[in-house]
Structures are given as C-alpha cells and as structure tokens.
Image 1 (spheres, rainbow, N blue to C red):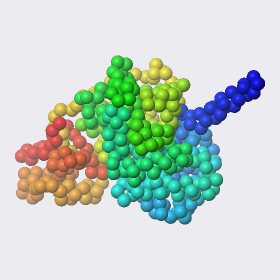
Image 2: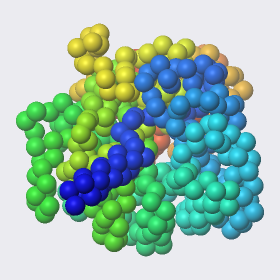
Image 3: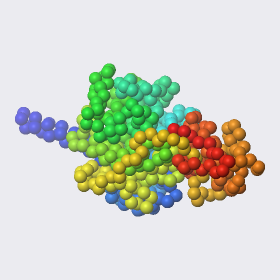
Image 4: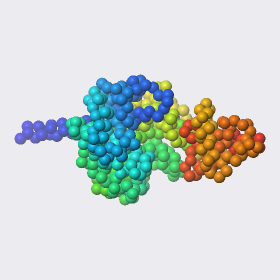
Length: 464
C-alpha cells in the first residue's frame, strides 16, 4: 500500500509538472510591424532571442516572419486580422483555407501555439464586426481540429474598455452592450477549449488619466507602503496592474466563468510621447517593464490577489518603437528596442538579471503635468503631397479654421505649404482637442511648446 501511495503521489506531481509546463511563466514579446525602418525578420528573431524572450506574438501570419522563426525554440502566437473576421465567421471553407495557407506550411517547424482571432476588435473595429468574433473563433478551431492541430489554443485579445466598471476590482463588470451577446459565448468557448482570455493591460493609461489620485509608484510596482483594500472582497492590492487584472476576473465570474485562465496579451509603458503625455519616459518604461517581468516570472508564481499562486503567461509590448502607428506620440514609443536594433534601455525578459546589473537610468523630467500652451505644427521632412492633403482636410473642418491663411489675410505670408499647414493644424487642434482630436495627421504633425506665431499672425494654441 505504501508503494502504491508513493507511486500515486509520484504521478500526481508528474501531472502537475506537465500541466505547469504547458502554461509556463516565460515572458514573450509583441512583434509589431508598423514601421518603415524596422530590421528584417531574420535580424528581428535574433534580437528577440537576445533579450531573453521565449515567446513571440505577431499581428498577422506574415510568412517572412514565420520562415525566420522556423527551427527556433520560440513559441509563436499568430493572428487572423480583424478585416477577415466577418467572412470567416460565416464560411467554414474560408476558415479551412486560412489555416491551410497560414498554419500548415509552417507547423510544426514553427512552434505555433496560439492563434488569436482579431486584435481588440471591440475597441478598434466597426460594431458589425463584433458579432463575428465568436463564430470566427469556432470556425478557426474547427479547421485546426480537422488537421489534428488540437494543441493550438484559439482566442482573441481584449482591451480594458470592454468593462463597464473596473473599480473596485470586485465591481468589475462587462459592458451591457457586449456582455451577453459577445463576451459570454466567448467565455463559454474559451472554457470548453481550455484556452485563455487574452487581456491587454496598460496601467499607464488610467494613471495618466487620473495622476492626481493614482500614485505613480503604485502604477510602476514601486510602492512599498501604498495599499488598497477592496471593500467587498477584502482583497488587498499593492499595485495597479493587479487591480486591473482582477477586475476582469470578477467580471468573468459574474457571467458564470470564474475559472477561465488569463493571458496578458499586451502590457508595457511608453518610453516617450507628446508634450502633454506625462510620465512617458525611459525611466518609467524601464522601471515598469523590469518590475512586471519580475512579477510574471516569479517562482513560485505570485498571481494576483483574486488568483494567488497562478501563472500569468504574458507578452510585453513591444519589440520596437514603430514610427507608423497612428495616434498620440506614446503609440510610437512602446518599444524595448529602437529600429536600429539598439536597446532603448537594458531589459531581460527571462527575469534573471538583477536590477543591480543595469546601468543607471536617465532621470524623468515629465512626471508632472505640463502647464502652458502647446501648438501643433508640420513635422520636418514630410511628403509635400501628403501635407497638402492634410492641410485641405484641416481647413474643411470646424469654424473658419483656415480663414487667416487666405490671400491678403494676416497669416497668408510667408506663402509656403509648411507655414499654412502648421497654422491649419494648430487651428484644427485648438478647436477639436477636447473631443479627442490629436496632433498627428498621419505622422505629418508634431506638438511644440515653442510659439510659431510671427508678426501679426497669432497661431491658435491648446492650454494645459
């Protein structure tokens, strides 16, 4: 009986080790491609390995990248782009064809382990596509099963804006417009297929939005004294990341799925941004990413207050600063590496490098809100034809946006495209920033704290 008991115990621990091996704490990297100056896939794969990454997620099924990954030990996550979801959701043959074209030529030489059907679809795509997410996931899974590729987990990534409420964490609730028609069927699929809820978590954004009430150290995992106790669950939190993750766990629980595993599909901190984007700097980015990697690779796993001791597999965002990403400046500055392959700051995704081994970081200079005026001007060296189109767009919006640059008016001279575009961008931004407009114009504009006004021509500005 003793031998049988020991044998049973041995197999119990063997099962646990195998199970934990399937969901290891190794940290991966998101490899985005929205740049016109990025290294080749072959060089990129070597760079991914050099920073200690064991996994990589791409936002499509780029064959050049997959060929570069062939024969490596990197676990790979690929993606069905959002624009394909509607057609795939209603056509099993299209799903089969997608797998035949984008998985079979590479598997198993490329260790494809995860297949995401869409990226932040709820946040970034028209509403009519939302209802295609789960049917498309089912058809992609069916196509994988047809080819006996059962080990590839199917999911989709979600941002935090799918929640109606996230504070306190115990009050986490999915938005009423998507909870039952979309999220619940998705959770049912993930539970049945033993897959993951792929979650994008960025403490930077809630901190940036409410920096007066959220302590920066709490957002960076640096606080040793600040604690928050959820009044309903009585769980105590020491960082913003855990609060955000647990709010999703509580939201899933409310829909009847308390055990679906979480995968951190994206997390990171911007290393630079626009003048008004406080806290986006190298010091904070390195601090956050080093600390979150320590948390995610801890042995034994620490989990979150709602799920202590559970592994949170993850991908850090992102490999490179990507100069063609639209939106505010932070969007183009999440990279661990510059496009030339050099480090923005030293980082080790394996979590094995102690902080003491890193060089000192440059002290942050923008952790406090900028106070003053900002203008939006044409960026240097941009394409003249594109600048002309952007000027036309800006002038077609709002109330008399471009009147002062008409012939004979106070801002007509100097009569140059750059001057007129700069005035138009500033005028447009000053009118529409409050409703979400940015100083970007597809990379043709940049914010400045230097007043471009000249003579009688006074440029409109945004005051912070």
